[in-house]
Figure (cartoon, helix red, strand yellow):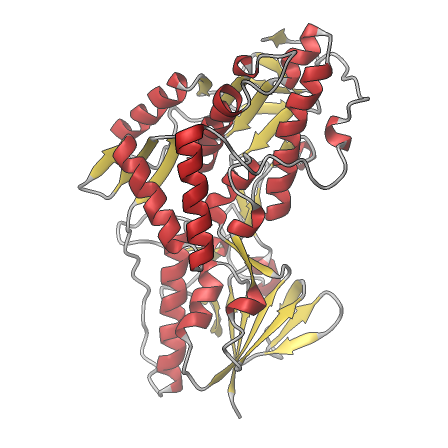
Length: 433
């Protein structure tokens, strides 16, 4: 009987497993609750109207259509019956496996304040990105019609919580959208007066980068007009304000980039996990007590060569996927000796704004325009298909030359979160900025 491999999650790690098992004597079932693979590093560019959804997402079935040994299943996984070796689906059906690979990713986390989620939008899916884009664009549209100066100021205040790469990239791009792209398109407001506030509980932005690159990023953000608030944790989020330190800031748009929580895979297996819910796997990426189950990507925590956890980035997930595929093929060939995973850090990259980026290759550190061009080239290289690469490259060149973003569409047909008829109540008591 053909060896049955089930891969849950068609992200970077899951697709790498599938890709590297090409030619192996296995039958593969690829399960995902969405029908597309998402290039998540550029998701914020959809949220800020720089790219269209189709430029960073591809139907899973089209990616594996030339692999007859792969069956694609669109379903929501709710658990794993490890004793029977079955994956449990929401509709009550099950999928049997001989080897299981969990690549189920993570979602944004609110540090015990899930009640903030309706007001502080996270960014992990295409739906998240289009919702954030709608809120940003609707804020400008509503401000154009608002006659009350206080409410207008709140509409033109955009708050990003968390100054990691996503938060920094979002803040810089929103600032450029307001100051460059939209400046000549409204008649009753000056979009350049919009406030972009980046709040970080820690002492610096881009904490995972060296101090000199972090300092450069901070200076660059401030040159773009971003207000950076360091050393202040958010204590409350509502529909019309955010509180941090002793400040309550009136705003209608809050974007959450401060933390993530792994999928419930650890709960499915009653396996050890860290505080963020990430599975604590063995050195070979198997789940403790389950040598036939692997876990990779954002759903796991595993030590890198320095002893620190491997970062939750796309290259790491791809390396883990390749390693797991290698183990599966080795086992099929009769080799059972341990094969510990060894992570090779290929560098950290973050864009700050147009013609501004930072890159850390270890001994080599780059910043400014050269880093921005290399950042763009690296991301274009990892996109899937020539059409997507060409389309993204043309879009970026157009933004670079003309300050125009072509994906400024307000979609989904509803604006309940920023209804033109809604008038916000005054923010809760506190020092208003």
